[in-house]
Image (cartoon, rainbow, N blue to C red; front, side):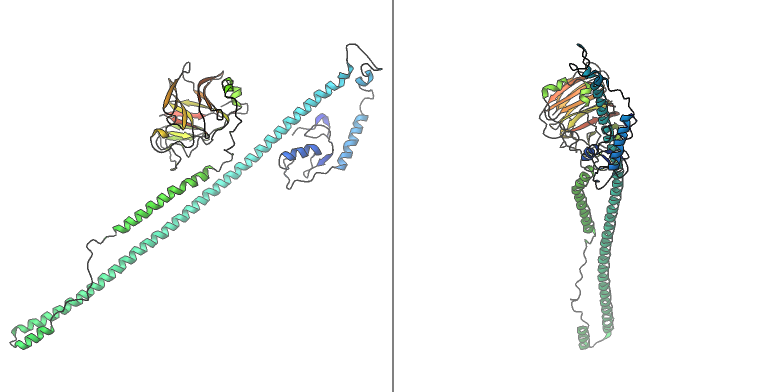
Length: 495
């Protein structure tokens, strides 16, 4: 906030004039009732000077004692001023009974100074309000960042807990299956042992009968032999129903468990995209409205050859780690992508490019937008619909080789614009520029690639199309290549 002006302790920090209908907030600071009311109508109730917040919003009442002190201070200030009247009163109005001159208008002596001072005060007040808004925005953003970190840590702990519960659940199911197998094993072994005992008793009985028959070989009584053989005759064994299974195996059990595992994995693959989508949608910035602008006349696009004009549409971008190919290393706040030959430990994701070494940005662009990128090696810069393919090596996944994307291929010696597999050589008028600007007028259906140097912005290629969806900035990187998305500093220069 601005300080009290002209040594007046009763000046309002907003308008810099003397307090009018002064009000005092709970923290002790005082302001004009009108100034503070207008300030609170635009934002939450808080003291503009010490940042103290008030909830609910206090009712503003005139501080009668302070108003009387302001009135007395004004009277004292007037009494201490020189008794001589102002020059314009002494001279009198032109054409009146006072001083009159043919070429000098005395009526402008005092108003000129008052108008200039009023302009200074208004300008300072406007700047003070902007400073206050930025300071409040910084404070709120820092608070949101701390809250976001805490929420992210809590979400991480929750995910660990949920997966631990899943692990515990599967461990219990594993124990159940193991107990089921052991129970079946024990039951079958008991049945087999019982049958073994039954067979053993039958064998003992048969051996006893055989011993009795051996003793009959010296007996001459035919009737006795016939009677004994009849009594020892072995009837068919109808009590045994055991039939051995020559193909006994636990293979079907293993197959059933393998099928269960496959079905669980398929279910996870079906449901995981909703989890990934929920994670991607947790953002500090509202992506759906971040880079929208009003439509403009397509004919005016070519006049945008001044970088300062382009910077008013500048979009802060960052690469999406959920779409980045595993050979891409994202650093510097996900604003730089490098392909070094090392495979990164990114988790599997349905949005990730698995063949073409590409990545999209997080931000979908609409309206008028402008961004810049610096590159090294062999790269492709462009834009694509979110519906571009991600899996496989088909042209449906390759930037610039389908109807869903537009690209500028950059090498050490050439530039090539490509859309839907149609390539067009682009002349840079010299070596390809290391910094490329991309301008999009989504509503007008215009896309421009520009060469950016410290002295100028020069159009390289212009394409026209009917864009039906938000466009996502995208890049492809060759071996040992780098792409950095430029940011914008407080002076409006991309860095």
